[in-house]
Length: 147
Image 1 (cartoon, helix red, strand yellow):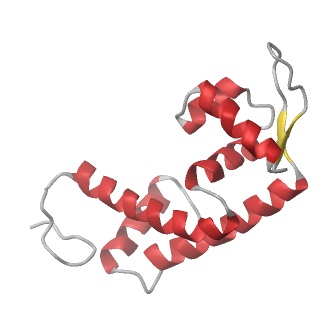
Image 2 (cartoon, helix red, strand yellow):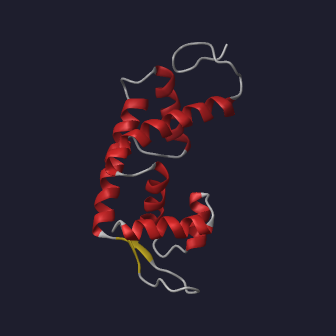
């Protein structure tokens, strides 16, 4: 019998479905925690990609974010309007150099702090034992440090 994080029998033996359900819960928790910053999980991911891959093109950002190039253009335009990023060569048909502003860096730093709090709540010492095991396995599989 499979066990959920609430220690009730799972309705499936599918690892994929159980992980998708857990991922949805994580996304909901993180989204709620980021809401006071006027930040979504997707927007956080895009800011992280921009910060982590200097000089990334719109196409590269789209691949990393798993969204269309057109969606990246719209998202970057919104981030520019919010003062979080700047597009240094914003001309039609030319490559862009997109970077975080100081405000964007501050927001990303605060969002990472909030994500660490969510991690602690969902996977830390006081979390459900099954979720602690999942967190430990993920950190080991992706060689993530204990936060």
